[in-house]
Image (cartoon, rainbow, N blue to C red; front, side):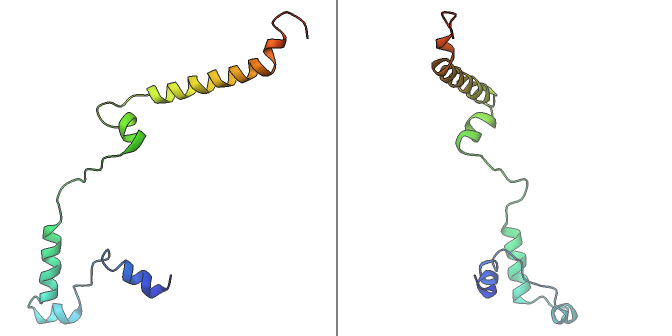
Length: 98
């Protein structure tokens, strides 16, 4: 990306400079200043409410938060690992011979 396209993309995120020497020295508020003040007045006030989605939102945040998915994952990995180990090696030792 070119620097100009980056600046153009971020133009809406960066507030404009409203306290220029010409606007401060004149004493009267300009239309640009009024637009910026109106924009900031229209923003929501208070803490933002972000809701996590997916598995994190369903199991780890909110009123249903628990560690059950972590425990189930550990047990599933243990079960799969033991099954593979049994099939590859341990079933040859069940009658005592090697």
